[in-house]
Amino acid sequence: MSTKATVGSCLVEGLRRLSSVLDAELLLTHVLGIDRARLRSHPESPVDAAQAEAYARALERRASGEPVAYIVGYREFWSLRIAVDPAVLVPRPETELLVERALALRGAEESGVADLGTGSGAIALALAHERPAWQIVATDASAAALAVARANARALGLERVELVEGDWFAPLAGRMFDLVVSNPPYVAPDDPVLADAPLRFEPRVALAPPGADGLACLRSLVEAAPGYLVPGGWLLLEHGATQAADVAALLVARGFAHVRSHTDLAGRERMTEGRWDPPSR
Figure 1 (spheres, rainbow, N blue to C red):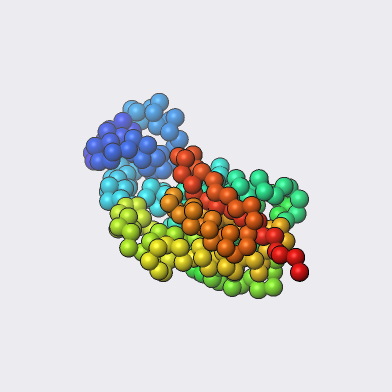
Figure 2: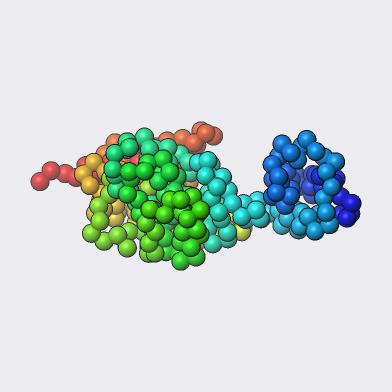
């Protein structure tokens, strides 16, 4: 790019390199530290050489398929700015469905909630933001992921969320919860989508579980959850768009009641819930 670049000329270059106007604008607002309204209303504003070079590097990364969130360092989720890096998945809009259902199932009264495989902390922090009385603990087997979650908790003033290292329920022995939520790995390991952008930039361990069908972690969670749920407690699981029937069957077979799946804004069944009503003795 020329050292005499302007906002307008940078955007022209961005649109030449990328197929998405939004991506080109988001990257430029990040580099310049301005909002999109300012970007659009002042195309003649000068862009210095260092900023133009930074934008060129950002375009190169995005053109390779790297998620915008990794380039700018954050993603908006549930109106919160969630910092992300390659140690964690980029929060998806469909995961907000999990937050919505958790909030619908429990009111503002004090409740014990566990978020398993928290990654960036997006789900746990969104719940904490909406429900100040909830006691929320979030686990993750990755120390690097928990470092990101802790930074997000500090930045958002939500450090009351307890973040503990360990695999799923392992660090929660002896504790009981009203709600357990999780967005576990569920992509089949041989699914070719893992080799495509943006998934090839994200941590594979957070995307694909062991086994052939992508259900291994979901099976494990369903099997273990009753040991950590109070009577009437709920288990909420995000899963792939074709896995709802399988997850519902797992829950029913384990003894969960009121099992139902819910669709995201695109009409795909992306999460399934069940209530633990233990059999009377």
